[in-house]
Image 1 (cartoon, helix red, strand yellow):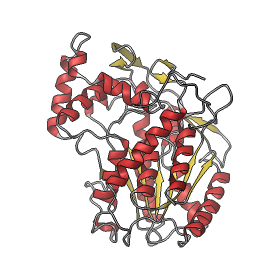
Image 2 (image 1 turned 90 degrees about the horizontal axis):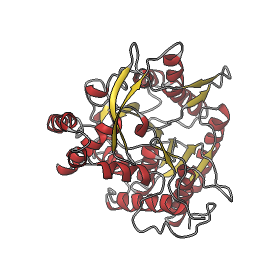
Image 3 (image 1 turned 90 degrees about the vertical axis):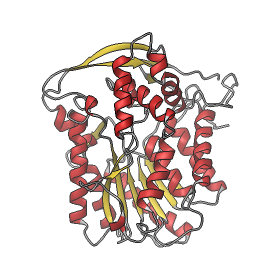
Image 4 (image 1 turned 60 degrees about the horizontal axis):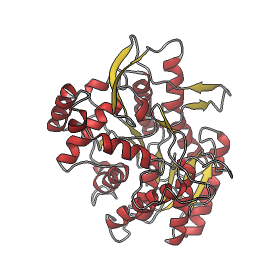
Length: 408
């Protein structure tokens, strides 16, 4: 079939297998060029990526495997292709990753299932032992990346299904957003959280499941004093706080930070540590529909590209590994990992530079329908969004007839 992007209200409803595979291959080539070189003590040998199929999770897995040579086990819940319909982007990304890992002689196992469930946690433990055996390394996981981005979660203890929402708290929020396909600026309003919105969002996007994963891996005897675990968050500028940091999603991220502290206390001596990494704003399947974020990110991209400091997912993750988690000092002494006063790793440091923020806000204030194309990087935002679904990838023939069940 000929597959073209189907975009509705900043949501892409399909994906392209060849495009997704090509993006994975290009990320792999990037991290291989930036790899530290030879294997050394302290580098990850066995990595578990919970939420491995897209965005930061995928780039983390690629970095662990192709920059550091780690055997990897990835967890995600994706929809496979059918004869008449493409699969989700993550479905193709996982296939591409496993295929490229096999070519490179790297051990990889990708599990499809609900990461919130006890069953998948048990399956992951078995997969880690199997991967370690195939790689000829001890059955101890060195690195655990927690990068889930699910809108719903069924609590394994209660069986209750919780749904997250992205809403302000206390009062409605209005802000400008951009329709990436048309370039139209619109003002959108998000109504405030009601009833159990905050509670449910914390249950889905907070730190409870991360803690359950660490407990399960501890029970299985898979942790060690070398184990490092990292979860990802975003803070952003004050102009977005009403909908993000101080909204329902922000409350969930606060709980994620709480979980990091509690994991460190509960597993003290058993692991090297748990950290929150504050990452840069990027175009993701979720961020494209959050009020004000597309407008802010479009202006931010323009500024950071002009200053030569723009990064995508894979650039961020390679820098996280090389300049934070596994520096020459930190690779054998986790206490040497550079953090802020709250103990968080900051990879949003370039985004939050005073000069970057000042210029970005200035452009947002000046931008209107006539000046937006000059002040913001609309084409870059649109490209990144489409690329995340396998579209607008240079070199891919989108007029070619493809089988949605195959990568090539």
